[in-house]
Every structure is written in structure tokens, then in C-alpha cells.
Picture 1 (cartoon, rainbow, N blue to C red):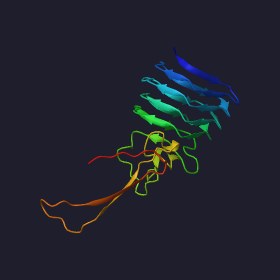
Picture 2 (tube, one colour):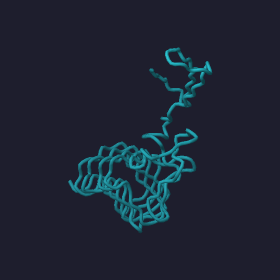
Picture 3 (tube, rainbow, N blue to C red):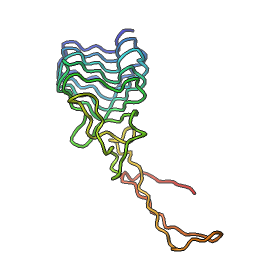
Length: 193
């Protein structure tokens, strides 16, 4: 099949909860369309294609999608403008994204997860957001990229502090630490030594 879903000349459509995988061209194609919502879709394995392709149009909202192993996770031409793209997982795509027009890749405090930067993303304040933006192209950046997949759902890493109980450490003598672990999402924390 050539396209999974094709929105051409569309206004105000909602495309959600679809599995759009293994298409030869595009999982979702948007052309000359405005004010559509694309959410909670899986776009997987469109290897010679785009997960989401925005050829033209604007004010579309694209959020909470998972884009895996596509040639481009999202491809937005210069005629695509003012689209809001946030809280998506971009995982192992050949190219995470391309943007020719001006689009917004985050909310005021939440962006997307990009597997391409996961290994180099620093989070010195442990807020779940990378300390530096992810630049897609000129005039297109995610200023709040997430450290982990689905990070906007509260998958924050635990904060662990260790404090030595005794100040002296000697070979063959037990050394005692006090360990405090907290997790802001109230998830269960397990650890072992």
C-alpha cells in the first residue's frame, strides 16, 4: 500500500490510535490541510518512506505518536508551517526529522524523545529534559527534548544520593553508606549491590 492515511484538503480531522506500519511511501500524508490532530499512532518500519509527511498546511497538532525505523520520522516541507509537534517518540529512524518551514517542536515545558541524542543527552538537574536543545533545521528546534522514551508521562529517573556513615575506609573493614532514593513519579524503586 502506498499511503496509510492521506489527508488532502482536510480541516479539523482527528487521526488517532492507528498502527501504520510497513507502507511504501508514507504512514500519514498531509497536504493542504489545516487544524488536524494526529495523536497516539504507531508509525513503524516505513523504511523507504516517512512516518508522517506534511507537504503543505499548518496549525496541525502532532503529539503522542511513536515513530520507529522510518526513513524520516516526520518530514515537513517548506510549505508546512505553524504545526505543533510534541510528546512524540522518534526511535531509530534513518533521519529523525526534516523541517523546511517554521514549526514548533515543543510546548512550554515538554518536547519529544529523540533516540539519536539519548546517549549524549545531559540532564544535570534531573528534570527529565535534556540540558541542550535538539536542532532539526534552521528555525526548527526542540527546546525541551526528553531524556527517556515517553518522558512526558512521568518516566523520570530516580534521584539517588549516597552518604558515607563512617569517614575512614580501610581494606578488609566494612564501609557503611546511607543511601536515599527518591522518584518524583512515585514509582517503585528497586536496586541491588
